[in-house]
Image 1: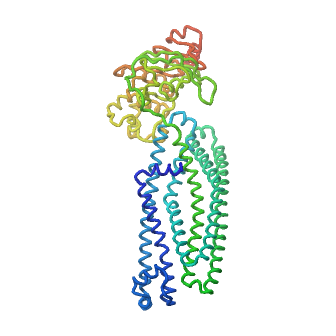
Image 2: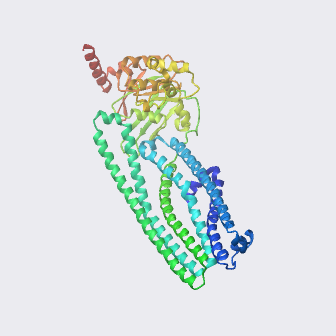
Image 3: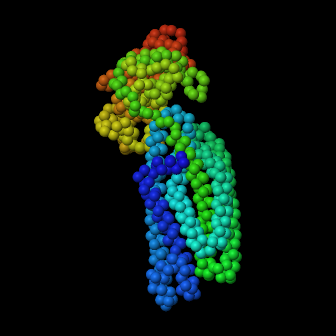
Length: 597
């Protein structure tokens, strides 16, 4: 039932189209069986001259002018058959169109729901999930739904309608022989059900291994620069080959299951047909069955038995569909962030970390431990410390990508837990250490903040970020395509474009998360100086490993092992023993040695 509800919920306005499809399929199944009845009428009543004994033959006889007239104008039967097959073709066309409409619109709604839900899932989910697995679910599993509803779904009702109508006709002709037909159908159905239950696990294993393969490809392509830098091409090829071998093994096992089913079910169907042929011959010899009726039995039983075999294949595909729906539901059952609920006040005033501690769910170690820090409004501070000391985590808490384990964070006295996440993140501009650029033009990447931004505003922001002249030096200027993740640009160029993009947000709080590391110290200083000239005031937080980036700040915070160990100006910290003084001395010696060279 939950799977049916999943489909029904995503059909939207095409629920009526699905009901129409089922009605058309049932009519199509009924019309498809009529030609055999016409042929039986031709053999028994027209050619053999037997008196009409059933309702259908009587209607046909009256419509065509009587058996004697039909015998003289045998072409009338051919016309009737042509008309019937034209109707079959018409309903087949309608059925195919409705199948396409239902399947494609259903999958469009699923894709839209998946994408919007994934966008709203919390950052912690995206950190732990494998991108390749997520992509595989959103492509292969959705395509499995599309393929099932574009063909097999209506086929189930076609088979059931065909079997029901055929059996009603057969029981009207010969009950004893019809019981044997029912027995052979039951055997095929039971066999198909057993197969369906056994093969379902194998489908899941195949899907899961395909997800591993997709993850492998995605990671390798994303990290191709690292792979080549460390000469790991052969290792990655071998690793992919091993996973591909596993995928082949589980998929081949599934195919072997299917092969066994098709061959064995074919033999069961043939034995069923053979049984009816033998019993039917005796019935004809005894005079309890006419040749025309015997023809109907053979043709109907063949049609129904092979349809039931097809039902086994559909049931196997239904097994794959069930697995795919469950995997899609796994994503949709993850709780999405409510980014809009909450207050939307002007974010002015001091930022206060009130005894904030934080640890990840799967790690007992405190990443931040009792951080008590106030950042004054419009103040520029630098946060410096070793790798892994918790600097970036502090900013993740400020933008509510994570929630503090203990303590509270306030802006202007308002707890950020009470502020809308969308409003908070719109007012906290962050330039990340690893800037992400989309595979679009430079101008498109800059205007992703707001399409209404003017070119003049873009030029001003890029000038502040010291990248305007660099962009103009490109052959196509701001229309230059940067490639996936900005691969065609240098690290420094990407970071400066990302800085310009964040400046365009005009956020009252601006954070540089080690994002000046790829630019030289002269450009670093020029960017920081230009930011101070912006209209209006802003609170600026600079996370850095470089003393040159921090020494001009109003205050410098030193974090070690998740704790604040030092706080003061550049001069104050250089005058006291501690981490900052040691970093300054080391970096000063490096600069001096470079100047000597």
